[in-house]
Image (cartoon, rainbow, N blue to C red; front, side, top):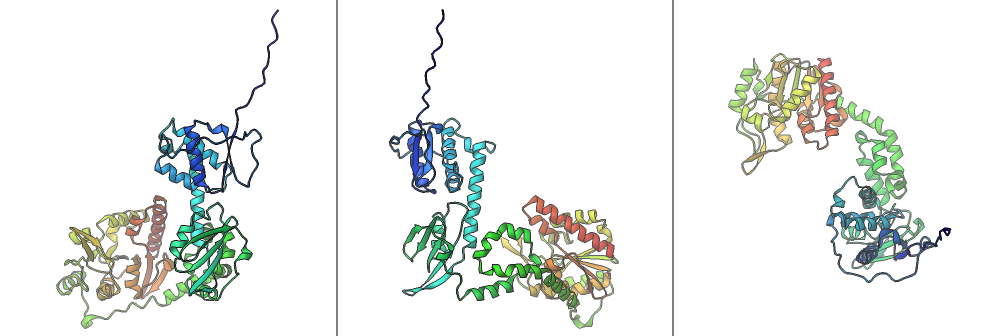
Amino acid sequence: MRSAPVHLPLTPPAILPVTLAAPDDFTGWRDAARALLAAAIPPDRIDWTVAGTGMADLFAVAQPLPAPVTTMAQPVPRALLHLLRHALLHRAPGRFALAYRTLWRLRERPRLHLDPADPDMIALAALAKSVRRDLHKMHAFVRFRKVGEADGRERFAAWFEPDHHIGRAVAGFFRNRFAGMDWLIVTPQVSIGWDGATLREGPGGTPADVPGGDAVEAEWRAYYASIFNPARVKVAMMKKEMPVRYWRNLPESALIPELIRRAETRVDAMVETVRSEADLFAPAEPGGRRFESLTALYAALAAEDTPPSPGFSSHVVPGEGLPSATILLVGEQPGEQEDKAGRPFVGPAGQVLDACLAEAGIDRASAFLTNAVKRFKFTSQGKRRLHATPNAGDIAHYRWWLAEEIRLVNPTIVVALGATALHALSGRKQALAPVRGDLLPWQDRRLLATVHPSYLLRLPDAQARDIERDRMVRDLRKALAAA
């Protein structure tokens, strides 16, 4: 007869409690992790807690930690260590366990930190990204208020409520940036202060610990209102970069709703001002001359012109295209390839322009292309010639020649490619954005401003390039319809 099986009670492995001194105690975590890894204690046997918070694991066994070690048998890659320093400042309760588990797995997979698809690495990267964003917000949105003076030094205080445990992490940044004044930053978790010689820290506080305003804030609000650009207002983006919850700490926040409400009206007023001043282009006529043809004009320009300032090429680059074109496009100045070829828009920017013209339905051969400044301005770097932006004097120097060029072609619409061309055509330096894509009355024809094709080449982001290129094509189509 077989005896019944005997079931012995299972004893779970002892859980080792590790208590850190503070929520941002990276040094304590690092020292404990070194000792635990040296003793080969797996992650599932460790209960990470912070002193004064949480509840200890019911199965935790009070026992001493393994002996501390100063180095690890397997060094932690610098990139991973940098990631951990940020990730462990997060509020997530499991961050210390996640970080230790990653180091434990690193023993078997030395290149684990290079695997972007690993779940633990994805989680750590997300924590670190959120902390870095919080650090950026604190750098940007702390507003000091003057609370007095002592020993000839002004004293300031500020309140800030970060999302994560970054109070001590930002101390060095503010010490370096505001070394010449005494300051105190109060957060719910910790307070940090600087007296000109020593960084100090203390317990956290509340908004009531910081004054609600000071004498200079009225001046700051007046200045902020004066520089607020209504043409650049993007409310969704502004709230993303400056979340509404930070507004209560900003002296200028009370102005923002009204400035946003008035933005559209102010932009309309700016556009009307530009429209009313668009006929400022009335250049003087040297000797009252009038040329009978573009050929005669360019011959005189090449023979008579001297560069208006240092750094110009010795070559004049004339316009090119149909002499009776209904669309005339004005760029900034020739580039290096245009200078060598003696023709406008043949370099990389010209190739972009050709593609945009074709997509907009404009045949380059039926249009006329020229530049506001007729020579290539550059700075030398070894054997290379780097583009230099023309100044107001350079633009004014060629304004009469450009006017005569336009008179001879007699287009229905003139397209300004970029701010320099708009400056040359309107007679004043102004922002391109408020009038971009608008059909403006100009002398006895129309003027439309859009970006220069080189602007598209400078955009580093592919999506932004596509968006701006589509806008430029739409602007060119509007010009074609007007012509």
